[in-house]
Amino acid sequence: MKVTQLGHVVISLHGVAASLLHGDSERSLAVLYYPKYDPTDFNKGYCTSNPAYQTAGQGYSTELACCKAYFNGQKSGLCYSKLPNPPTVSPTAKGGGVVNVWYADYSLDWTKGKCINKAPIPNGRQTYDTQLACCKGSYAGQASGACLATLPNPPTVSPTAKGGGVVNVWYADYSLDWTKGKCINKAPIPNGRQTYDTQLACCKGSYAGQASGACLATLPNPPTVSPTAKGGGVVNLWYADYSLDWTKGKCINKAPIPNGRQTYDTQLACCKGSYAGQASGVCLATLPNPPTVSPTAKGGGVVNVWYADYSLDWTKGKCINKAPIPNGRQTYDTQLACCKGSYAGQASGTCLATLPNPPTVSPTAKGGGVVNVWYADYSLDWTKGKCINKAPIPNGRQTYDTQLACCKGSYAGQASGTCLATLPNPPTVSPTAKGGGVVNIWYADYSLDWTKGKCINKAPIPNGRQTYDTQLACCKGSYAGQASGACLGNLPKAPTASPIGTKSKFFPIWSGWETGYCDNDPTKLTGGNSYLYDTQAECCDAWFSGQASNACLRYDPTYGSRSPTQAPIQ
Image 1 (tube, rainbow, N blue to C red):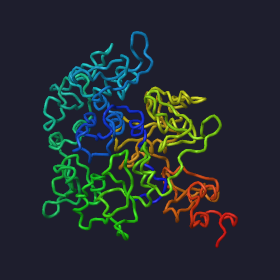
Image 2 (image 1 turned 90 degrees about the vertical axis):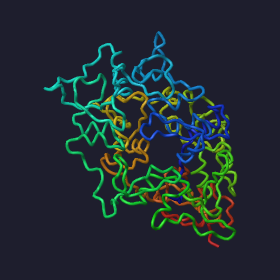
Image 3 (image 1 turned 60 degrees about the vertical axis):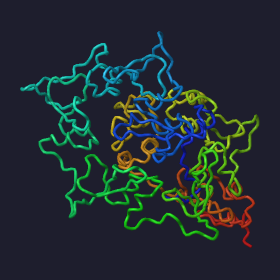
Image 4 (image 1 turned 135 degrees about the vertical axis):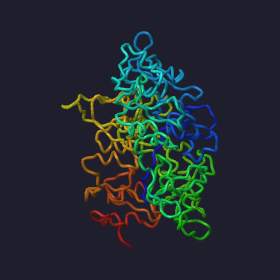
């Protein structure tokens, strides 16, 4: 996918910049950490410096930054627990060294696990308002019932048995190996075990992704998981062949389809969905007509698009336009767009420094050494982080028009609330509920599967949950990239992009230094472009001052006409 405008910025800067500038880990910057996913359980994933996993996702210079980027919200806290010195984020302790929230004690074996409220709370650990909620959220399915047994008044979990020692609910039989696991309805129900109304619901909830299909096979009428095969043992759907190494992975349509495997209508859609970012390009190469990824080179072995040079260390990374383009590499129409998209948060500023005319990133300071924009102070620990407006602004640091916007953008999910607490008038994070037990802000409903996730405004708001002013903003912030579109599908009306008209702000469109210009057509404005100006002259002066071609001031904006005094036509 190409980014055709200046402002498409993939902002992952909180973790990257924090680790580079603050030094959250003492490990060498020359080492990069990559995510190592467990194919069956998100809570078993962690970050490793083993280069064999570099294709799993973008590398980070510190283990902490990698954990924040890929495993933030991991209930087990496994990734954070592997850090040399795991940070802590604890609410103010009550008397006796305890806090008013509960979390899982992962220092114990799973069968003996329980919930505690001792201070300090491990960094990244999921917290709950009550001990019961913690047991349900962290130890659902615990066969021993150890967590529930520690409650002051453990709940009764077994319905009255029907004749023959069976009950009218189903639960997973964890006495069996995962590959042979099934759902049963024998009494008594193990204490704390998750129950379901039907055997099918139990299989889907407890054995989703079970490749053997053992659970579904025990149903009276097992569902068909593979469409009718065409001649030759193939089906009309495509899925990822995970029997191969990631770098050699491809999509196939052989029957039968593995139980629980994501399927796609076309081979191309499968490659994009399952092997996005595959550097080798093997999946795309197996297509009948593989897409062309390298534009025709111009003279001198260069092409008219730019891409990140990942052969260099992150701190020295830059964008180049040499042919051939590596297969599967993200490309951009301009060098500037490439730097912003691939090296956002690069503290060294190396990429921007290679531009013919590097943009100025620090506005003129006002009196007292402050500027009129805000940015995150990554010299502080995350739990104590806040937003400041002191000059000069660190090179490459994301800036915001207001202190509140900065706190929301850079410290979303900060449990301590330090950033918001520094505001002149800190906002209330739990608004008074309106009629019907709802509040006027929205948050992600993490009780649902990711593919079915949506945003809700029911009270009370879970402790530490990120909130948004609108349902749309919540979907964009919490479910960006959700392939099913469940969150957006829950909106009253799907969002539309409509031009604002003659009052639209001007923004730069970088098609090259001598051809770049400013326009005010909102349909050309890509997400993330925050460089907006009231007039064409202001925009041109900020981005294309000294342009020999005078292309910017010569350009007739979409809405309104160019002022004769701005750009006399020669």
